[in-house]
Length: 120
Image 1 (cartoon, rainbow, N blue to C red):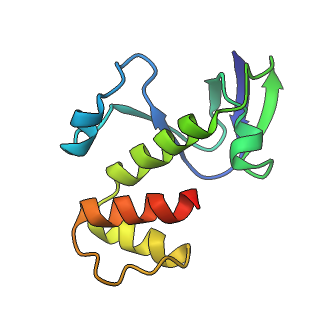
Image 2: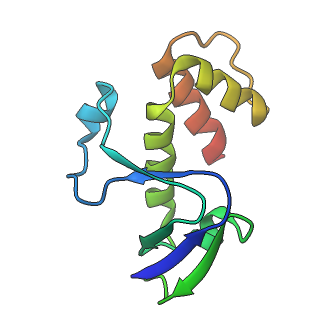
């Protein structure tokens, strides 16, 4: 497990001690407990946080990440982040990414559409 220092902002990640959610729980709106790190905190991770989030946000302190996340793991992480957002946050996220939400009104529709566009 590698150690990274959070250089700027906040980093929110699923609590590693909590069990993973089933797809049914995610669809029902359940959220996995999360842990929030603040600027200057040390984050331990098997993922390469520098590659994933950029050198402006993280610096590797010690150890080496086990592996880069697979496409499926990245998609799952993005879906979890989207599920944690409220409707307004989702709309803002889509706007920032240039994603057209015409005809999408519910959270489920927006999450599904955003995931489809991001996976293209």
